[in-house]
Image (cartoon, rainbow, N blue to C red; front, side):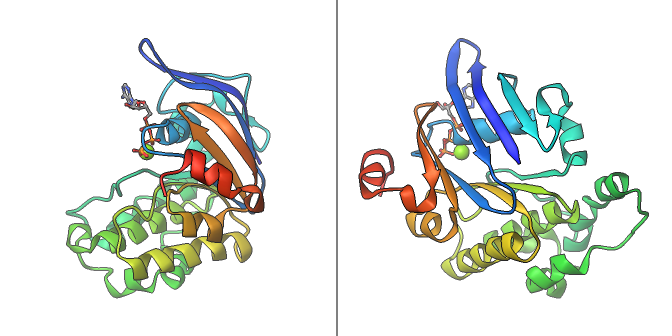
Length: 235
Ligand SMILES: Nc1ncnc2c1ncn2[C@@H]1O[C@H](COP(=O)(O)OP(=O)(O)OP(=O)(O)O)[C@@H](O)[C@H]1O
Ligand SMILES: [Mg+2]
C-alpha cells in the first residue's frame, strides 16, 4: 500500500499542493481526479521524487519514499507512465520495451533477457509491431507501448498520468480493460489520473479529488456523488 500524509509541494514561491493525505490500497485502482491545472501531475511527480516535497508520511510497502532517491523508486517496484507518452521514437517497439529490462533484472536478481509474454498478451499490437519504430505508431499504440514498458519492470504499483488523453475510443476501451485485468488477474496496484467520467466510473475502486492543490474529497468509487462531480469536475 502507498500512504501519503500531509504532503506539501512548492514551485519556488508558489505553494501548489496543500496537506494532501490519502492511501492507495493494494490490488485495487485509485483515481486522482480534478480539473486541469489543480496539481494532479505534480502529485504524481511528488511520489516519484521528481519534485521536492515536505510530507509527514510518504510510504510504499515498508519503504520511506522521502529518503529513497528517485531512481531507486523504480527498483522498489513503482512504475510510472508520465503524461504525454514518452517513448523513444527512433527505437523499435521491442527496443523500447527492453529499456525496462535492466531494472527488472536488478530488482529480481534474475538475468532474464526477454520481454515477459504477459506484455504481448495484454497488448497484442506490440507483438505485431515489434520491429516498427516507436515514432511510427499511432498515439494510442504509443500509449500502449509506454504502459507495456512500465510492466516490463514487473511493478507492484503502476502509476499512470492521463493514459487516455487524446486517444481514439477503441484504444481507450482496450487500455481500460487492461488496467482492470492488471488489478484482477495480476494483482497490481494502480494509481491513475483520469478526467473522463465514464472511465472514472469504470475504473475507480477509490477516488482522490483535488481542487487547487487541496484534497477536497476522497472515498470509494461509489461515494463519488453527482454533487461532487458537478462542483469539482468539468463535465
Ligand atoms: N515546473 C513548474 N514550475 C512552476 N509551476 C508549475 C510547474 N509545473 C506545474 N506548475 C503549476 O502547478 C500547478 C499544477 O500543475 P499540474 O501540472 O500538476 O496540474 P494538473 O492537474 O496535472 O493539470 P492537467 O490536468 O492540465 O494535466 C499549475 O498551476 C501549474 O501551472
Ligand atoms: Mg497533468
